[in-house]
Image 1 (cartoon, one colour):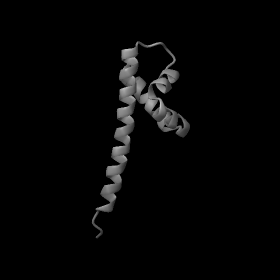
Image 2 (cartoon, helix red, strand yellow):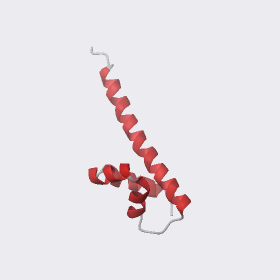
Image 3 (cartoon, one colour):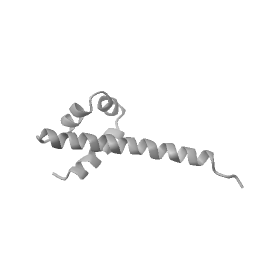
Image 4 (cartoon, one colour):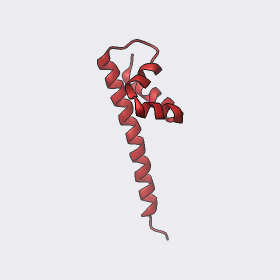
Length: 76
């Protein structure tokens, strides 16, 4: 299993479904465990959960910085 690919796939799936995102926020480990179709060791599962959390947080930061940038743009 390619962990990076799995993280990317899960991030896209979770971002695209508000109910799934809400479930992930409440219980990330169980949500990811339910989405992965194969058994994985606990340490690998935790790496995936951490990766998904990081990618979702990074997306929020990117959006926030983009919004701030548009506020401070000079108008010619």
